[in-house]
Image 1: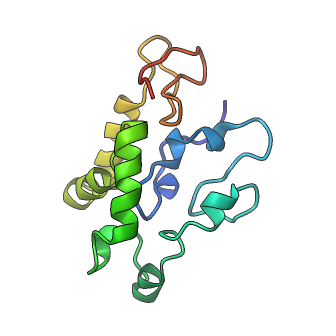
Image 2 (image 1 turned 90 degrees about the vertical axis):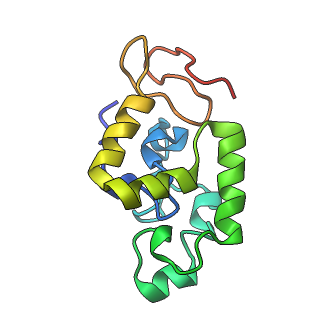
Amino acid sequence: MTKNAFSEELIAPCGMNCSICKYYYRGKNQCPGCRNPDENKSKYCIECIIKNCEELKKDNSKFCFECSNIPCKKLKNLDKRYRTKYHMSMLENLDFIKKNGIKSFLEKERHKWKCLECKGIVTCHGGMCLKCGFVKYKN
Protein backbone atom coordinates (compact mmCIF):
# COMPACT_ATOMS: atom_id res chain seq x y z
CA MET A 1 0.00 0.00 0.00
CA THR A 2 1.96 2.97 -1.28
CA LYS A 3 -0.88 5.46 -1.49
CA ASN A 4 -0.31 8.95 -0.10
CA ALA A 5 -2.58 8.66 2.91
CA PHE A 6 -3.58 11.52 5.18
CA SER A 7 -2.87 14.49 2.97
CA GLU A 8 -4.79 17.73 2.61
CA GLU A 9 -6.01 17.01 -0.93
CA LEU A 10 -7.78 13.91 0.42
CA ILE A 11 -10.08 15.87 2.74
CA ALA A 12 -13.38 16.41 0.94
CA PRO A 13 -15.40 19.64 1.20
CA CYS A 14 -17.83 17.87 3.58
CA GLY A 15 -15.03 16.87 5.95
CA MET A 16 -14.75 13.25 4.79
CA ASN A 17 -11.22 11.95 4.96
CA CYS A 18 -10.83 9.98 1.73
CA SER A 19 -7.72 8.38 3.29
CA ILE A 20 -10.00 6.18 5.39
CA CYS A 21 -12.36 5.17 2.58
CA LYS A 22 -12.03 1.56 1.44
CA TYR A 23 -12.44 2.61 -2.20
CA TYR A 24 -9.28 4.69 -2.00
CA TYR A 25 -7.33 1.45 -1.45
CA ARG A 26 -9.17 -1.10 -3.59
CA GLY A 27 -6.99 -3.15 -5.91
CA LYS A 28 -8.68 -2.26 -9.19
CA ASN A 29 -10.11 1.13 -10.17
CA GLN A 30 -8.82 2.91 -7.07
CA CYS A 31 -10.73 6.06 -6.22
CA PRO A 32 -8.44 9.12 -6.28
CA GLY A 33 -10.41 11.01 -3.60
CA CYS A 34 -13.16 13.62 -3.87
CA ARG A 35 -10.97 16.53 -4.94
CA ASN A 36 -9.35 14.64 -7.81
CA PRO A 37 -10.69 13.75 -11.30
CA ASP A 38 -13.75 11.49 -11.46
CA GLU A 39 -12.00 8.61 -13.23
CA ASN A 40 -12.40 5.42 -11.15
CA LYS A 41 -14.77 7.02 -8.64
CA SER A 42 -17.97 5.25 -7.70
CA LYS A 43 -21.19 6.65 -9.16
CA TYR A 44 -22.13 7.77 -5.64
CA CYS A 45 -18.98 9.89 -5.33
CA ILE A 46 -19.24 11.34 -8.84
CA GLU A 47 -22.83 12.41 -8.21
CA CYS A 48 -22.24 13.54 -4.62
CA ILE A 49 -24.61 16.44 -3.93
CA ILE A 50 -22.17 18.02 -1.51
CA LYS A 51 -19.09 17.82 -3.75
CA ASN A 52 -21.21 19.28 -6.56
CA CYS A 53 -22.89 21.90 -4.37
CA GLU A 54 -23.55 25.14 -6.23
CA GLU A 55 -23.02 27.19 -3.06
CA LEU A 56 -19.48 25.83 -2.68
CA LYS A 57 -18.71 26.48 -6.33
CA LYS A 58 -20.28 29.95 -6.28
CA ASP A 59 -18.24 31.04 -3.28
CA ASN A 60 -15.15 29.10 -4.42
CA SER A 61 -15.15 27.50 -0.97
CA LYS A 62 -12.79 24.69 -0.06
CA PHE A 63 -14.87 23.36 2.84
CA CYS A 64 -18.54 23.41 3.77
CA PHE A 65 -17.81 25.40 6.95
CA GLU A 66 -17.09 28.38 4.69
CA CYS A 67 -20.70 28.34 3.49
CA SER A 68 -23.29 30.62 5.07
CA ASN A 69 -25.81 27.76 4.90
CA ILE A 70 -23.92 25.34 7.17
CA PRO A 71 -25.14 22.85 8.16
CA CYS A 72 -27.42 22.29 5.21
CA LYS A 73 -29.86 19.39 5.13
CA LYS A 74 -27.60 17.41 2.77
CA LEU A 75 -24.64 17.69 5.13
CA LYS A 76 -26.77 16.89 8.20
CA ASN A 77 -28.07 13.71 6.53
CA LEU A 78 -24.58 12.60 5.50
CA ASP A 79 -23.26 13.33 8.98
CA LYS A 80 -26.04 11.31 10.62
CA ARG A 81 -25.35 8.30 8.40
CA TYR A 82 -21.60 8.39 9.03
CA ARG A 83 -21.97 8.90 12.80
CA THR A 84 -24.38 5.96 12.95
CA LYS A 85 -22.54 3.55 10.65
CA TYR A 86 -18.90 4.59 10.35
CA HIS A 87 -17.63 6.03 13.65
CA MET A 88 -17.04 9.54 12.36
CA SER A 89 -18.80 12.87 12.00
CA MET A 90 -18.46 15.21 9.05
CA LEU A 91 -19.68 18.13 11.17
CA GLU A 92 -17.14 17.39 13.92
CA ASN A 93 -14.40 17.09 11.30
CA LEU A 94 -15.34 20.43 9.74
CA ASP A 95 -15.53 22.12 13.15
CA PHE A 96 -12.11 20.74 14.08
CA ILE A 97 -10.56 21.91 10.80
CA LYS A 98 -12.11 25.37 11.20
CA LYS A 99 -10.84 25.76 14.77
CA ASN A 100 -7.48 23.97 14.58
CA GLY A 101 -6.42 23.92 10.93
CA ILE A 102 -5.93 21.14 8.42
CA LYS A 103 -2.49 20.04 9.70
CA SER A 104 -3.85 19.38 13.21
CA PHE A 105 -6.81 17.55 11.72
CA LEU A 106 -4.57 15.28 9.66
CA GLU A 107 -2.51 14.44 12.74
CA LYS A 108 -5.66 13.63 14.72
CA GLU A 109 -6.89 11.42 11.88
CA ARG A 110 -3.55 9.56 11.66
CA HIS A 111 -3.93 8.65 15.31
CA LYS A 112 -7.64 7.82 15.23
CA TRP A 113 -7.46 5.53 12.19
CA LYS A 114 -4.16 3.79 13.01
CA CYS A 115 -4.33 0.05 13.59
CA LEU A 116 -3.54 -0.88 17.18
CA GLU A 117 -1.84 -4.09 16.04
CA CYS A 118 0.37 -3.26 13.04
CA LYS A 119 0.06 0.57 12.71
CA GLY A 120 -1.61 0.17 9.29
CA ILE A 121 -4.69 2.12 8.22
CA VAL A 122 -8.18 1.27 9.42
CA THR A 123 -10.98 2.25 7.04
CA CYS A 124 -14.22 3.76 8.27
CA HIS A 125 -16.13 1.45 5.92
CA GLY A 126 -15.71 -1.81 7.80
CA GLY A 127 -13.55 -0.55 10.67
CA MET A 128 -10.84 -3.03 9.73
CA CYS A 129 -7.12 -2.62 9.13
CA LEU A 130 -6.20 -2.99 5.49
CA LYS A 131 -2.83 -4.53 6.33
CA CYS A 132 -3.52 -7.12 9.06
CA GLY A 133 -7.32 -7.37 9.27
CA PHE A 134 -7.56 -6.18 12.89
CA VAL A 135 -11.06 -4.86 13.62
CA LYS A 136 -10.86 -1.55 15.46
CA TYR A 137 -14.45 -0.43 14.96
CA LYS A 138 -17.44 -2.73 14.57
CA ASN A 139 -19.99 -1.48 12.07
